[in-house]
Amino acid sequence: MTDPRVVVIDNHGQFTHLEKRALRDAGVDTEIVDNETPPSELDADGLVLSGGPSIDRTGRCDDYLELDVPVLGICLGMQVMAEALGGRVDSGDYGGYADVTVEVLADDDPLVGPLSPSTRTWASHADEVKDLPPGFTHTATSDVCGVEAMSDTDRDLYGVQWHPEVAHTEHGEELFENFLELCRN
Image (cartoon, rainbow, N blue to C red; front, side, top):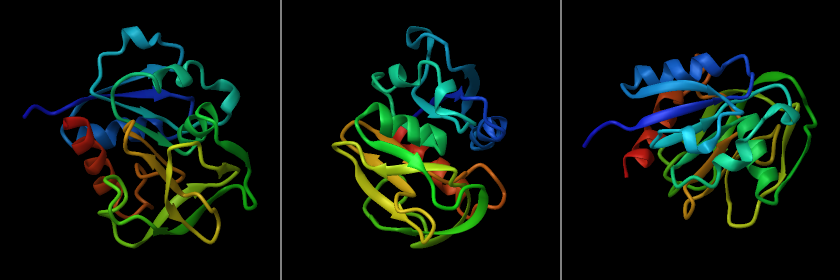
């Protein structure tokens, strides 16, 4: 089986290049493209919607959710996904970046289920998903944020509030490997 090609959609976040690096380190072909790139120009087996500073600067991210490939939304990427599909995003109670212990709620989830039941992560909670979109399952939580992860396995759409690409996050490489496995199927 060939390794998938994964495109990282740049939402102007400070960690976008680290996301590309994590995927490249996992041995897959990857590139970063601007979030105004037409979906028809994307040649990918999977997409990562990167984090970023503002939901107002996410370009065509809503359109990418219609492609028939697995999508992983990271932080703002998850929020864009939630809002575009009928969920609700609002300001977080804690803001800023912090070390957060995440509790996995769904051990059968293909993205976060294989992770340790309790995982230390690096996350920003300036904004967060308050209400899940229809069809999504709540897959992880923390004392800081109710919805730390969500998934819709029928549509291969996944989101995490934390940043798996940074060294401060435990099991970040494993989370990317789990996503790549979804892209291979």
